[in-house]
Image (cartoon, each protein chain N blue to C red):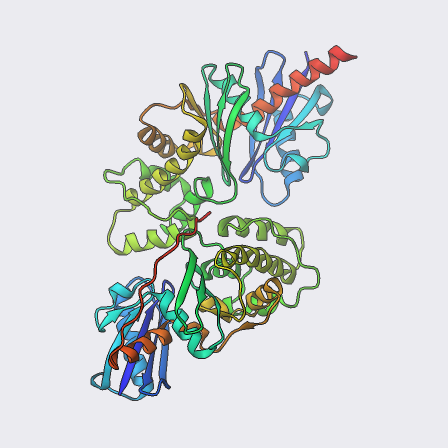
Length: 273
Length: 265
């Protein structure tokens, strides 16, 4: 028996197929673009292909992510909060605090020893610290998104960046460049400014080890380092961190296929900027 | 007759004004600020001197304001933009009791007394929501320049509300609206209304009173004036000199300081 999880995020859409023993059979990732429904179909097809199975072999499919209600196929939807917690617990069972930073939002989630959501806090009102923020910084510096983290780690004299607003940071970066500051130091400052903001959000749910970092931004080693320095503890990151939402959705799908039902959670609003 | 200079070093543009004792403006200049604040201030000041056919020796007092007010070493004093815009607005419109200053990177609301002294103020300089940069981002997403953006805003019949507060997230929202076939002019007016809402929220916190005067760079944008008046439900004062209100206030307060200094010695 196979199950699948599809995570329609603001920037990328991810899918995984799991077998009945919760083993990962295949995964896929593609840009979401303007048509969420189409992106989720294509991601699912690509994932089935990568898994070497046919759609009729899949018993249960769960959609998650901000575009989960636009996924036209599948059996049900589960919030990305629950899915990320589920996925993080599966990969790192001692996870108690989860930081999920995606393309357009940041979430801090308190997780039980069973991988259930105890409390959470999110910022989806402001792009500061999200993938969109880092994309913008990369564009201004004429770098690839994947390069800014490693480049920031080469800094010897980090600059203090005073803004957190994505738009203002762009102007601030341009000013620093004009004054001859080096890219490494600017980037390290940008990561620190955003790290401080992220920590403030995580403090609202409480920081308890182990801390696991998920979402697209967890691929950025500069952010991982900044958060580790600020938390004062090592942070769990996996190659699958970006797939954590759909992995969790797949695990819920497996439970559903085997007869269990997922828990509902309440949302706590965190003010934007 | 002594002449003072007011230099308003803003995030987007730097303005310089020369003013005589009767508060008559002898020169007014605006230049792009760019990354070098002192250079921008020097350039604006020199252009203003040329416009009035004066030398720097003719200027008795230089007051700076704006976010770069500490970046011009030859200044005699720096004064916050809140104080300066309030005085400047009062010079332009003597009946002013409320001032809305919308610049490139910040917006402010002030309630002032009959002399233009600030009684209460609220500001946002942390985030591009409610400031000029918000419109710049929307223009970029729509592949328009600012002139086209303003022209489009006035064409709108059914403004398209923009729910994102953040300029960057609004940019994605705008792209979705275009994909869904929404009209560019309606999206543009929606963006203006979004700024109006943010700024008027600041104004309500200080208390709305007659008359409301608009200052700062966005006072040059008729779409912005329309959006503010529609949201507020009444007319606001503005003129083509409104963007110089900060520099005018600085120059005016320069005279006041100069007189006080003269009186003491």
